[in-house]
Each structure stands twice: as C-alpha cells, then as structure tokens.
Length: 222
Image (cartoon, rainbow, N blue to C red; front, side, top):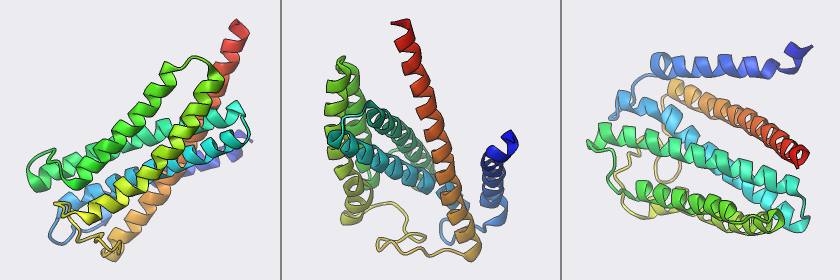
C-alpha cells in the first residue's frame, strides 16, 4: 500500500534520470550555441521553480493577512526558502553558461544583475524573519514583505532583461518569448520543466511536514 501511495516519487526518479540522459544523449547540439545550450534544460527550470515558489509564498502571505493562521505563514516561508534555493541554482547554472559563452562567470549583464538584486531582496526577507521574535508580528510583517517582494519577481526575471541590451543568447528563447528549438530539444525542455515542477512539489510538501514536526517538538519542550 505504501508503494501505491508513493508511486509518484519513483516515477519522478525515473523521469529525472530520463531528462538527464535526454539532455546529454538525445537532444542535439543547438545551432550557434552548440553543446553549451544543454545547460538550458536545467537553468530555465530552476528559474521557473524560483518564480513558482515565490508566487506560492505571496499567495499564502495574502491568505495570512486575510486570516491570521500560522499555518499560512509556515507555507509562505517554506515556499520562499525553496524559491531562494532555486534562484541560487539558476544563478550558478547561468554563471557556468556565461563562462562558456562570455569567458567569464560574471559580467554584470542585465540578466545577471537582475537576479542578483532578486537574491538580495529575498535575503532581506529571511533577515526580517530572523530579527523578529514575536511569532504573530513576524508572520504579519513577513507576509507584507513577501507580497511586495513578489511584485519585483516578474520585473527582474522577465521585463528588465528584455528592456536592456543583453549578452544573453536568444537563439532558443528570443526576446518575444517564442521558443525556437529542434523537436527533440523541445521534448527534453518541456519534460524538464514538468519534472522540476513535480520535484518542487515533493520538496515543498516534505519541508512543510518537517517544519510542522519541529513546531510540535518545540511546543512539547515548552
């Protein structure tokens, strides 16, 4: 019965293995970018998951302000943590790509600069939470900050990089947002987006459960 309940975890494991194999063995090299474009299958999904996680954090923050339930604060902060992690991963994979294409890990390109600012914004979110001891006050101020912070997410991820001239390569995903890929590349790319989304769901659910257990443990100790 346990196997039936958790079948999707095994499915996810197989799926991600197939995506990794597909990224390096099935998808052909991209025009102009060559084999360096293979990192796209991991870089873009990381950015997508970061955006999704920050959105969920903002949604639960709104729910908390409408109904002060610490469960909403727990889910909002957990989503923000995962969003921050995947923003870091997107930055790292982007830097590796930059090294191959621009011969430097960091160039202060508009896309690099915007994601760096986004990291600072959410680092301040966690600094705010750690600076306040009263749980209700922490939850309320964090909710307000999370909502305001998310307003900047589409601006820094989607708008600024397309306003200013960028070194970022666009043969595969151009400024108009149109995907121009070989059919095999597109299959792996979409499969990776789907796999990372399920991975996020698993991590998120697991972290929420762990956070609940920690709260219960602290309450018992008190």
